[in-house]
Image (cartoon, rainbow, N blue to C red):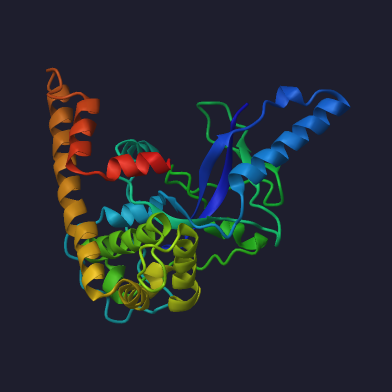
Length: 317
């Protein structure tokens, strides 16, 4: 038994991370020649069913973009002589526990991503965690063509150390945010949330190139791919945000795009602020020796009552 995971690449920030696909076949089945052959067939079937194609656009909770989306406040003035090739790195906060809490409470921003294939024509490879339950994860290749092992970064979010993938053909250049976003703050948060909202409209609603909400989801996913490849010249969406924003606005129309952006930024932030205030109140009460004012599931229920996004996102998980 054990979980099978694949590597995905976020189209907004170009991060690489792991996403769990499902439970792998039990290795105890691989006994004897016939058992080994049957086990290999099960692994291949798992890969084809759950990993699928590297061209498919999926909505996943990228840890980098979620850190961006939770930025707040005014960005500091950029350095006067900052070189475009070496932008100041944005502050990334949050560990796996915090990230997992956001996923459970339907607060995570879902961004357009693709599973990564390392051999043209081959489906994305599948990895198994060979470490003990309490030990540091050791993801090893179990099916397909790819790096034999993976190096995670120190964020404890499942994100990979991107330079470690350079030897396998991955462009490991760091994200070079434009000056308007490089300082973080509300500008970076708003851009991330707006970009994610546009991608969600395309992938879930089938929002086609001409703003036709009746077009199917396949066309919507193709719109996201063209957004990255054409408007952003193959670079991450946030790195080419001015061009990406203009393209999205042209696809949706100015009024529809403005309404979507306002909902994705102002509306989401208000709901998030209220949620975090409730969590702080709960934690303070528990730390003071008294019973929490609300149980965690009650807090989540109240948040779900504020927005319908929780139900939609859980359905996609």
